[in-house]
Image (cartoon, rainbow, N blue to C red; front, side, top):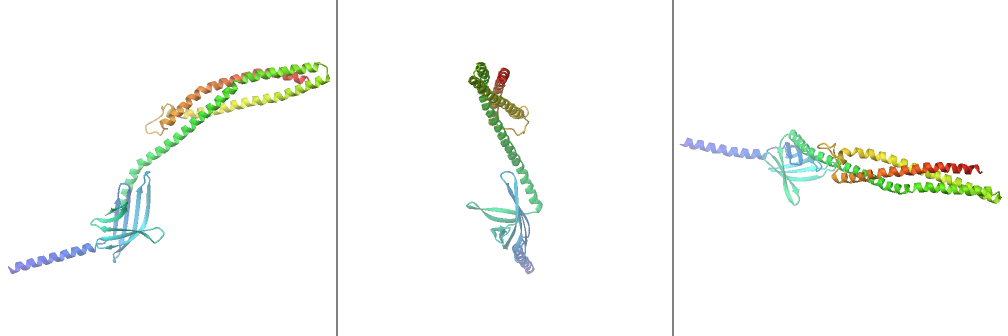
Amino acid sequence: MNDLFAGRRVKCLWAIVAGALLITGCDSRSVSGVYVSHTDNQAALLQITETPDHRFTGTLRHTTLNNDGTLSSGDANVSGSVDGGSITLTVLAAILPIGKNFSGAVTRDGIDLNFANGNQTAVQHFARGRPSDFESAVAQLNQIGQPIVAARRHGQQVDQLNRQVGVLASDINRFVASADQHIKRLSKAKAYYERAVIVEQAKLTQAQRLKASGNSIAQGQAAMIVAQMGGDKSQLSMADDGLDRTHNDAISTENSLNARISAWRGTCLDGGAVKRGDAIPDMGPCKALSQAVASYNATVPVLHDAFSTAQNARTQSNARLALIWRSADQME
C-alpha cells in the first residue's frame, strides 16, 4: 500500500514539474520568424529576429490595393520587445530614427497588433507563415484589382471618345453657322456682279461721250473716269479672290469634316461596327453628333449651290467687264 501511495506521489510530482516546464516554455517562446497578414485590400509581411534580451528587429513589407485597382507597396524597418505574452512593435521611418508604436499580444499561431481605427481600436492578426504566403496574397490582390483597372481604363477611353465626339460636333456646328453666313452673302453675288457691269458700262459711256466732245476739259474728265475704272477693276479682282478663297476654305473644311464624320459612323452614328466590350462614346455625345451631322448634310448642298450660282454670275459678268475695260483702255 505504501509503495502504491509512493507511486502516486511520484506521479503528482512529475505532473507539477511538467506543468512548470510548460509554463516556462510558453514564456520563453521566441517570436523570431515570418508572419503574414492579409485582408481584402492589403497584405503585409513581417520578418523579425529576437535576441536573448527579448528585443527584436526586422522588416515590414506591405502592399495595398488602391481604389483604382492599382497596387502600392512599401517597406520599413521594425524593432520592438517582448514581455511575456505582450509585444511592442515600432515601425521606423525611412530616414529619421523615429517611428510609430503598436502594442499587441503573442498568440498561439502568430501576433495580434492593435491599431487605431477611427475612435476604436482594431486588431490586425499576423499569422506565422512564409514569404510565399505573402506573395500569394499580393497576387490575389492583383487579381482583384485587374477588373477595376480594366473598368477604369475603359471609362477613361470612353471619356476621351466623348471629348473627341464633342469636339467634332462643335466643329460641325461652327461650320454650319459659317456656311449659313456664306449662303446669305453669296445670294447677293449675282446682283453685285450685274451691278458692276451696269456701273462700268455707264462710266465707259460717259467717258466716251466726254472725250468725243472735243473739249479739253471734258477730255480730262473722261481720263479721270477711265482711271477710276482701273480702280474698280482692282476692287472687283479682290472680290474675285475673296470668293475663290472662301470657296477653297469651305471645300478643305468639308473634306476634313467628312473624313472625321466617316470615322464615327460605325461606332457612334449607326453602331454597325461595335463589338461586345468595345469602348464607344456615350449616348449623349453621339446624339449631339447625329444632330450636328444632320444639320451639316442639309446645309452643304445649299452652300454648294450658292457657290455655283455666285461663280457663274462672276464668270458671265467678268466676260462683259473685260470688254468694257478693254474699250476703256483703248481711250487712253
